[in-house]
Image 1 (spheres, protein in one colour):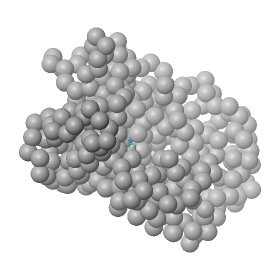
Image 2 (cartoon, helix red, strand yellow):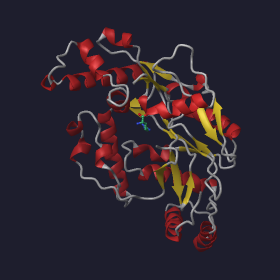
Image 3 (cartoon, protein in one colour):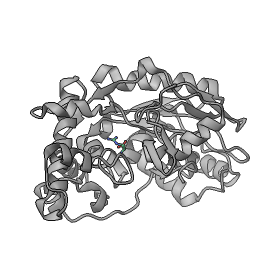
Image 4 (cartoon, helix red, strand yellow):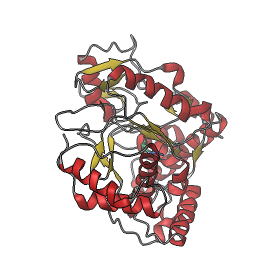
Length: 362
Ligand code: ARG
């Protein structure tokens, strides 16, 4: 549902786009039309070039992202004409294909129709295009606890999970077109690349039977440009290893694997002073980086990513722009103080255009 857009936000966007050389037509006329559209609750009209610029700048502005050095390389697919779930399904399959390239991952964003008065859709219910089911079974969870609610929703819509459920069952897509009816689509398995995890020196690691998918395609954030929101605007880059090794597989609220790995390593888990959590984290992260590299799948380690973030900041400064950044998100969840970003003061200014949490987030 679109509320009247703030004229200041509209003006600021077109000024920025003009300053960076992408506005079509004289600025005052564009701002006047856009302000009238915004006031009426209509989506502000943008050219394809302006939309692509907005998407790239939303990435450049994303205070929580360490990987912004590559913001110019984002490939933006203008799918604003797509309003039904069948069309969305086709475009999302193409997104996976264009982004994955068998491991030679490229940043991609697909933008569907904007939110307009009286319409909730188009919308993607999944947090990410590729994700694993979480089954709540007698107090315990099989799979990814993050996705329990969505798994229940898919089951209620008639999804048939594999006969033998595992901790890594791919979730189907729940897509809403303008008709606002949730429609279930099977995930196109042949387009999903996954990496089985093994360790460079610990042979038993492979027997844990762990894996993760190659491409994170974030679907639960809306792109906001000049007061208009695009609630279905999935985007993807490549992983930083710690996202998988320190968080997805290690967090207590996720796969919670530190006790399992520590036990296999023969560590003393009765006392925190044995640093068993740190040791298990290191080996889990080593396995992720090693396995992705062995599978020919692009991934960045947190030391390289921190160094690249430094280059991004220098580039921005040279262009006369301040970098908006959230320290608690930028500092990696492993070796924090051993990376340069730990020692860098940061401030989140809330720049626009931006990505905002979508309505599907709990
Ligand atoms: N942290 C999320 C995950 O582990 C992915 C967020 C986007 N990450 C990225 N490297 N583009 O799945």
